[in-house]
Length: 121
Image 1 (tube, rainbow, N blue to C red):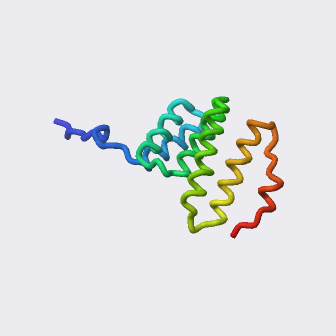
Image 2 (spheres, helix red, strand yellow):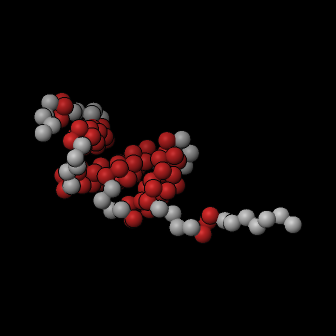
């Protein structure tokens, strides 16, 4: 008689599980719909996750859902402003990338000249 295998499917997924799976699906260009769902689940668990909103924005942009993507990137910026982190360089980089993606969808150009010359304090 073989030993009984325990299924992990009964264990609840964590924020990290959803977040990692979202990036794996998006990064591998496997299933953008499933990637979107994973990022949304991560956000449901942690609504203040800048990284999950950024991932969601990229997925929505890849799906050519511009208005939804712009909203997700705007949420990244709003969260960054509401909860400034200790790593100012990382915060500035994510902010610039989010603005660049929004500009690209709105104007067809990253148009980050003003952002690049802003001083990170």
